[in-house]
Amino acid sequence: MSVLHHESLLETCFETAVEEFCSSNDLTPEMFAQIEKHEGVQIALEKKALQIFEGMLQ
Image 1 (cartoon, rainbow, N blue to C red):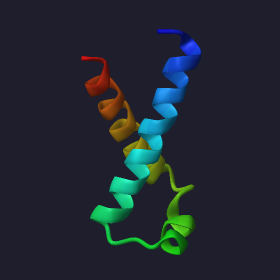
Image 2: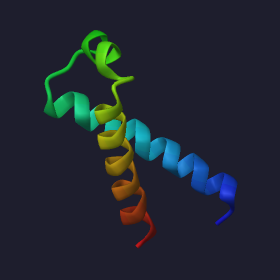
Image 3: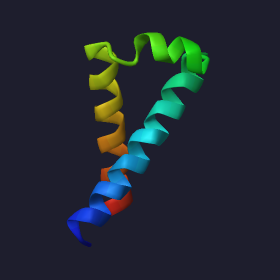
Image 4: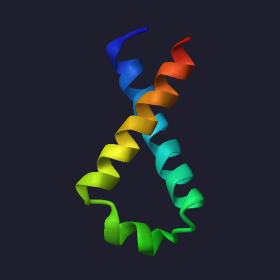
């Protein structure tokens, strides 16, 4: 797979991670917008997105 394809998949994984994070924490889009820039939230989302991405490659 090309680097561009991997980047596209990783972006999709990040979007999925955001959706799962909001769902599991009962967050509305407005609530998420208030915390999305927080370093801890970003770290959690990046970890989850990478986990989803690696699962797709196996």
